[in-house]
Amino acid sequence: MLSIGSVVLGVEDVPRAAAFWTEALAYVPRDEMEPDWVVLTPAGGPGVQLSLGLSVTPLQKHPRIHLDLYAGNAADQAAEVERLLSLGARRVDWDLYPDDADFVVLADPDGNRFCVIDTAAHNGP
Image (cartoon, rainbow, N blue to C red; front, top):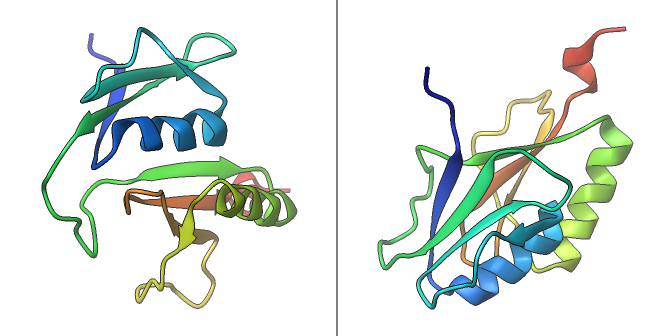
């Protein structure tokens, strides 16, 4: 049986991306960081790894793959968005927001898009 062990992001600056994602997710490098590669793991124990690899490919306006980061409710979502912005993320002017969006689209310092999701609407009463 297969399982997802690592999600890989292409980045322009591995150390800069590692600094952002370690703070954003409370992850730590699994091994010594290479100039073009690092694998980050949850500091608190098992979980999906985030691997950052040097890439020179251009960013996509509507990427086919992105990370969804879950927040417990709208207040948590707003607080996490502000925290991520203070770490170097930026808001993305997303042209595909539905009227009742439960997500906020951000980009990391390398421009990789990710969403912060208010999961309260999906958890029911």
